[in-house]
Amino acid sequence: MSLLSRPKLSSDGCYQNITPKSANWEYVGFQAHELAPQQTLNWIDPDKESCLVILSGKADIRVDKHTFHSLGDRMSVFEDKKPHAVYAPNNSQVSIKAITKLELAIATAPGFGNYPARHIKPEDMTNEVRGEGSNTRSICNILPEYDEADSLLVVEVKTPAGNWSSYPPHKHDSDNPPVESYLEETYYHRINPPQGFVFQRVYTDDLAIDETMAVEDKCVVLVPRGYHPVGVPYGYDSYYLNVMAGPKRRWIFKNHPDHQWMLDKA
Picture 1: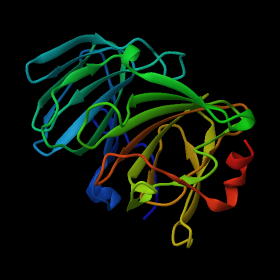
Picture 2 (picture 1 turned 30 degrees about the horizontal axis):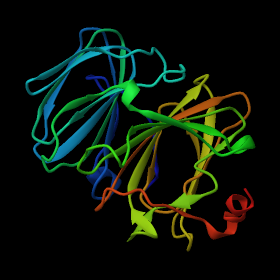
Picture 3 (picture 1 turned 180 degrees about the vertical axis):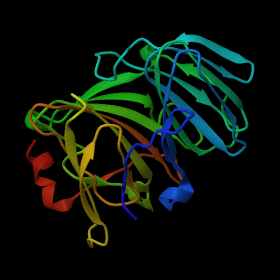
């Protein structure tokens, strides 16, 4: 099975639909939608919590009795702004109505009803810069480990042209805290300008998985296990949205030992 999912637009506006069944794993689901103004999207999932990320555009979102009006401040993921997001527990009736043209990401994972619906505001999200030199990238923590959710971890990353990201290579495929945690992961990629591409390699220590992909705009890369660095060519900026989930809601990664020297040197 290929680890690269290319966009395929359906009549309801969905162009990425990753399920645990299609990915041959247990926890992470991911959808990406393009909705026209006034178009609606409705669902209820008895077993899955959701994090709805407004990538671009504006929308009204209702989760059961909670209504969040006119969410969204940016018209492109490449604007220097944080997104708006909504957390919806499992077994919630979710309704989305696009106000403008809307690009929407929906992250899902097992939910247990422990937390109520809420608007995750841009001011509640933290930013950080990781790396140095041509390994520098900007992080926005949308639904990190220290915020309330049953399973989901969600983060977006912007990487300038010519830089590397998710680098040095790291993995999180062993349920062995505090050394490492087991988390499945999806990468939803956007490229600016959109005719470009980035490179992503997914590989394990024993090379049972070893796939290097030229990833185009709106593609999704699946990371069932192994290391997963991203390289961004000159002339194109990279954005990706990460969704992670596993048996424990902890992000503990292990760097590839061959490349640990870079961090030790720093």
